[in-house]
Image 1: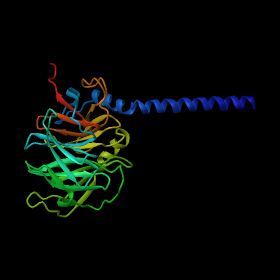
Image 2 (image 1 turned 90 degrees about the vertical axis):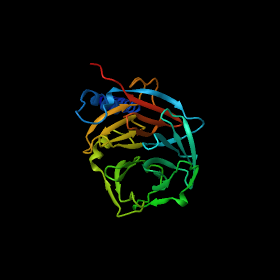
Image 3 (image 1 turned 180 degrees about the vertical axis):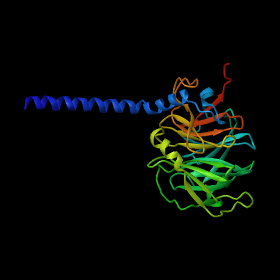
Image 4 (image 1 turned 120 degrees about the vertical axis):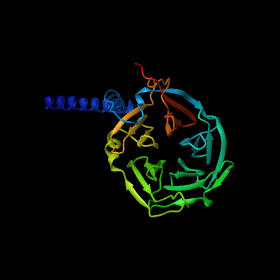
Length: 305
């Protein structure tokens, strides 16, 4: 009996140590670090962005008095960025160095989590709580918009909660929206037929879960906080706040590299606290916003010969 008690005590101690180790590895985001280092050592040949050569150019620049910056999009026609503030009901236009240029008050939602420029004056914003997408027209002189005047893009998903649509990006090559759900479960959707370039009407709606990304999402990213489609390469960039990673995927779901948002990587002096929005301009510069109101720019650096 005494021997059995000692064995049970030792087994309990071992289990306790394993649990403590697993907890420590989880807090340290060990799996994300392992994936990032693997991608750095095994970089595939592709025509996308070589994230291993990116360095931070603007780090943690405060965006004035704003808070809860969430989505981010780059408008190539204006050369400016647009971000949403999910508890202030605001869309803010920014210069490429993070200087606020204009505020646009949004009436009718207090949980905007994503924004993407479609074309001309048209944008799509995502309301996370109600799992809704809205098509907005924002002209050069627009200072306020109302969702009651916007077009609701319906496609049969009516889940409510705080773990739903977290990011949206327009894919002009395939004329579709890429939508990501944050978690429980996390996945990537392709939604086509929501927008017609000529008359802005809904056509035949087709919703497809892009299952080629499911494997990577299951093991490599703890959540999805934003998405952006890179037209020049046809690659998808998925941002994870909890993993502190921006990962690049080709259309088949193969990982093509990652950008680590931890202290000491890519020139960062401090880790990005809560990355919530990402976008890429025509030069390949990567823009990230983090709650509460921090702005980052990562730029490719010349490779040493």
